[in-house]
Length: 222
Image 1 (cartoon, rainbow, N blue to C red):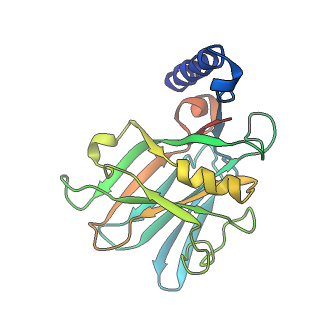
Image 2: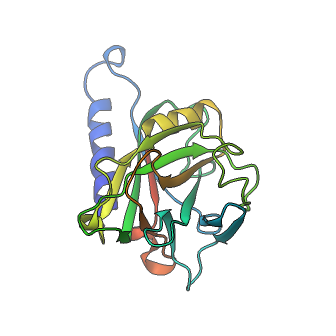
């Protein structure tokens, strides 16, 4: 409901702008589209040693979340992957000019070294060669370099559990559009540098609740 209400306001605002003044003084109307991630391609990769990995891909009735971050107990690292198809009805035309883009995720849980800690999260735009996740290829930032990235500000904390977290990914969407990518694919991981370890669990539910809680990409374009 929250997402639908926001989209309705944006559309009405765009129509109001389009109806004011002459064409010479007004830009083209802004269109808003909302794209849910593809549950078949969403997943995560867990690195359990320098050479061993565990891959989970495809949401099911028993697998309805993805993980990102470093385990504060074992030091093992999760990197999550979300895939948003940009083509077809409700997508983003290749000739569109991006106005803004927001990634909305719901945090199911956080696992912290200390209750007062926060988890700095990095969102990287990537282009995965195939739909199936491969390790170490897709886990590695060398083998699969980021096209561009952003970070979640403020960092994730225990206060975010059960809540929507909107992330400005406009710069990532602009790059995806410039490269004519067919999918907006992101790798989500704990930020680089000296950081306190922690894991976030992102809701990726299937079924009737998916529209309300699954990862969502909202794009405004002209």
